[in-house]
Length: 554
Image (cartoon, rainbow, N blue to C red; front, side):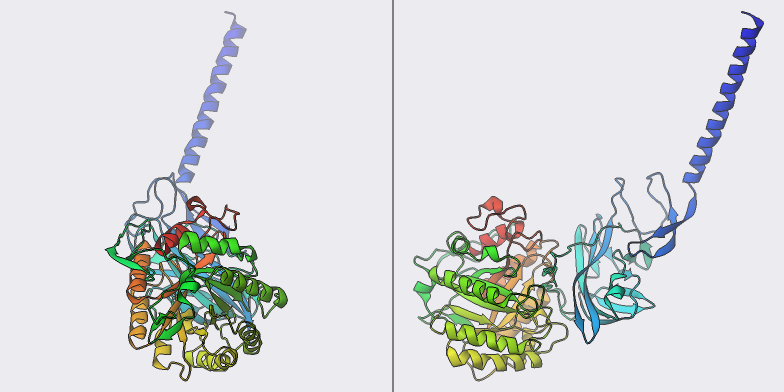
């Protein structure tokens, strides 16, 4: 080998060594940097810049004993904290927003002693809240648990909600969507996810509220048809939703042909023969948003396949498309009349529901209600299958005194045309405070009932006890709306609580309507969101809630 070639080889070896040396140094620096804590400027989802201390790891578990559990080996966060501004309205020249807040425990251990905070809550005043204790200080909304939800079991969640009055819409829009979670005073890491359960446009109930049926702040957590029964009991606690209570034997003929005009006797609904009777059926969603489900074939499916004998027609009054706001009054009235006529042809009972929600108080549109019930009670004065529900869910601090005043203004209008129609009166706090009505019931009229609504995953023993106490005091109660999920109309299903509710329903012969007949992508919908059929649904077409409700009703 020549000297030139030897020098070339030597030079190449030296260069290779130098390259290896620099690569090694670079790798070492990167490895060192990956173990460092750096200050990173982070823009949160409100658009406000803030500086957070961010620790980058190599996907190993932090062994610091002072830290709350954060992520599992797959990188999935053990906790989620989100808020959804589910509805809003103007009040006293201010902007009121309702926030549905979810704390989800994805871990394998119970979560206790929790606190949530949300930033950028400025120029704001809390109006009312449920399933938590709420405080605003220094632009931070702080939420702490009630006595009944201080512990969140593994793979479950807590839903709470609050209505806040802001100076304007822009201020409400700045509230951070993702909150902070503190466990026993120490901050835990939470996933940065989109707010859960956003509503369908103006709809939202129960993201619009959502016929947000949240529990009252003092409400601690929250069947079978007896037309013809045999002596066999069929109680099954299977969480898939096996029917509870007495085994039902299907009746022949239509419900109305068999039972005729109903009336109230004591706390019971009775038929034309004076025998106890139970109405069981379904409620439409907002008629303006899901009008196609108001059809004779759909009603026949519920009657013949599900065993339903009543349909509730939910006509919103204040929301987008509402009867008293920007909705088409003539079209809405035609839709209600179509529903009445088709239910009547099928021999079913039908509830005409003046569905207040964002109205807060029924007094807001009382004059419109007077004209509406005058028209319908006059036109259908000879139809004994119609029930009038005159105010769905008073809320937002509306007390029983205001509800009672409204009822005593509306009832005489209906009675002028129809002496005997059953009239159902809503109760405060999203129709949960039947105890208030029991203390001061409406007097001077027959065939008056009072509304209680529940959502089984939110409303539990305390509301069941409230119902029992009110009924035992002599108050006739009709559950004109319920579901087995959370109060937002979404979230998880609680089969244990749902079964407990149906036990109570069966024991007390309570009438009920399940929310809601639609394919909206939320847990309370009875039809799967990918199913477009408007009648004749198979078992595979039904949602988890729909499968359960059908088994209870049939």
